[in-house]
Length: 214
Image (cartoon, rainbow, N blue to C red; front, side, top):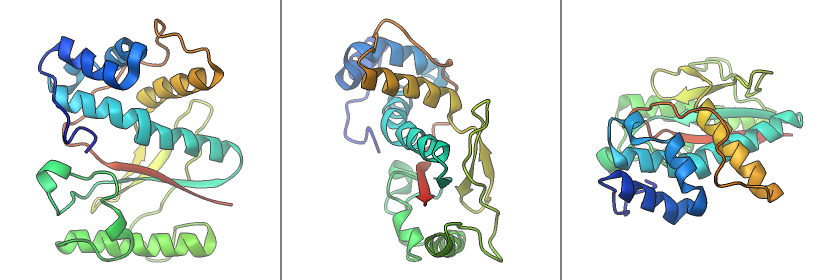
């Protein structure tokens, strides 16, 4: 979704130019964190991951960490049901979960409807009690509470209902350092902090969001 109408790079130089258009002088460090070799040589996937992580994915993660550190209950999720509007292009992209939350997904199959029904109940119980977990739920939704090693958990919203650990941990550490340096006015475009980028699946476009309740 983040590069749906973008010109897709076909070389490292074009990839760097695309990153410069988004991140200016910090582009080389982003390229180091998201080398196309981590994405089977697919520049579209690499660019989408870098742009998506920089804003929605890791920005949400950073906000969730700050809320959790302040004592707020937080529950993170990945939504992983392809958007029926155009599943091959949109996959499971930003905002595709909204109709599932309200129990009315677009053109659902049986599994998609089951996910929607459970999500609707999770959200309703969260709004009522501050905790999404309810009797008869298909999974226990763990609270988001990073430990001393910055390990965390979230629930994947799809028919498997897996608990996901440390989602994009290295990448979000990279962006967290970038956010902090930007806010402090100490960003050095020649210095890269954080872990090395990790490989990912070309079909991994799960939405990332957090819910908090005080």
